[in-house]
Amino acid sequence: MHEQLTEPLTLAAIAEQAAMSTRTLSRQFRAQTGSTPLQWLIRLRVHRAQELLETTDLSIDQIATASGFGTAVLLRQHFTKTTPTTPTAYRRTFTTA
Image (cartoon, rainbow, N blue to C red; front, top):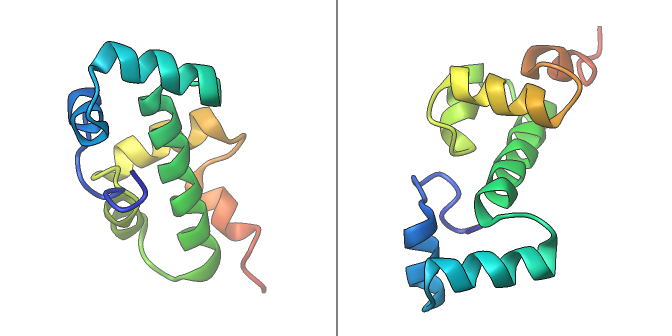
């Protein structure tokens, strides 16, 4: 999933890549990580967005694309669910005045 972070991934596509059924993938993934594959993917994408917010001057739209969310709206929705702040406020904490 790391290598395909910016591509639209479905549970079926992940299961196919892992050569197992979606049910088996979900069960084994949850047993090993404590979350579903899609929840884990969202956290991975939010982490990538955080890295880009900390280290680049890319726009929120560009970061949304580069982290796999596709749109700034989706980035903001998932970012605020995962972290206690918005992408813009998060970036401000790393900007020196």
